[in-house]
Length: 466
Image 1: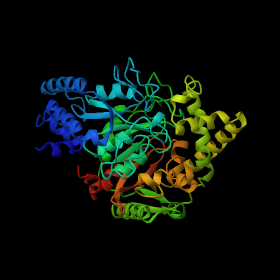
Image 2: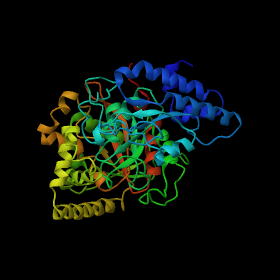
Image 3: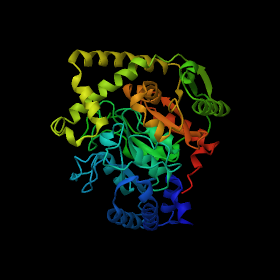
Image 4: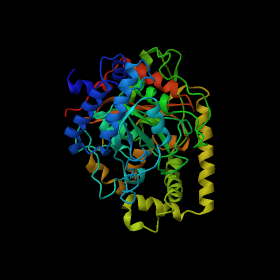
């Protein structure tokens, strides 16, 4: 099989071929490393390639599989992780120059669990500074493989670029205000933001502790389910990881949405939303109805205040995370992250408490919607496939910031799980996506819905010309 064809196989599919001994994990890993060597000098998706350890892990996997010991769907499959996730002995700079010499002495829980599942860790993927909005001025941002003039997303930009370009079969991203969903939409891949507490955050640099989510970014909903099954669950090292049983996310996938009720607020999802984003959502809903789903009209609670509150809350929590180095080493920070930290430090205790109360009220209002619906359908963002030129004006245009965050950060504030699904292309050729939002801890329902949609569409199977 040609190398390009191998690199664009699905994660579960390549795993099945490896575990059936039709493909060698060593040869697949070598093919992926060669592709990284060839393409990533331009894409810049990797912060650090772990070639030696990846090949060693692949050799171990090959022996285990040859002896009949199969650990699960990820066994022998090369993947990559966002730089903020610790991997023992490998640099973990967190997109910052201040941490460029940091090499952790242990794996993050998610990395350890991926290794336990037999996955091969190819390397660490580039990200924005501190997992906030912009890349550090001294770091060259990852490029969008569809078009270098298009935004590659933030902050899991390397995860989005590498996964779309076939430089890994899946990746880990993190989402605090939209950073699994932005790069998934921008690069035409599938991203699953789990419920807050479903996945341990131990061994991952914080941006904002009560907003941070770690989740899979792959090329299909099924592949997201396979990765989530490996990383989810309680963790003695992170007591915020909820002690609920982790289901088999690949079980019972039927391709039907019969009996599923999808809520949609037509006004909220269309007001200020551009034609491409609106079209993709409408067509996604039409496909869901064809698959047996029922669409129910809902009224979503107003998001303006919660979007406004996200910034100071994120700033407060980030200031705690950076207390050891900010403001004492402020000159080593880029302007975007420094601005967020300053905003957080300016808030009073009463400011914070008011945000907490509004957040709890909003969370309760969203929770009540799921008493009558199973999923909520929304755009990934209000404007589709933004260019780098447009994103450069973000700090000057309040409507642009609101349009970017209005369909993402509210669900970090509630901790709700979401899946981002490729659903079309904008006139400029950039991918466009929509989201399903689920009730807490119903990631299985999101995988089920995403898989059903992707069985009858091919947007997730389209790849950039490289």
